[in-house]
Length: 165
Image (spheres, rainbow, N blue to C red):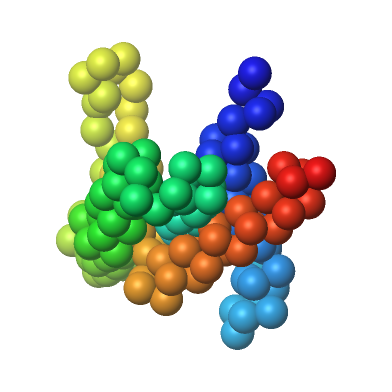
């Protein structure tokens, strides 16, 4: 039964915990920009991607041992996901910030007016701002580390409370 799949339950639980933790962290930060939308957003503190893969690694290691082939697969997968969260995805988000700023400056100086494009798939007008990559797409190293820690701790707690009873 799927409810007995500890690595899967641990990974999904870690995602949920990481996403929900984002709200109080944002509230107590300098910006005080807490919103329920943070629970379904990408980016931010902690990384739910890192939480998920570190929970998977921890759960697989608890169940099958760190030397098992399952642990090797999970660790390799985890390293790729965490590296990608800090690399490619973060760079894409930073480029989105620059593009948004550039468009805002060009509109402010009347070099361009708010631009519209035709979506080739359904012929709807799209505003240029709707096409810009989301700002908070990737993660800083501290956010990835916090996600890693969140995944490990949440998996250990889950194992103690639910799966060892």
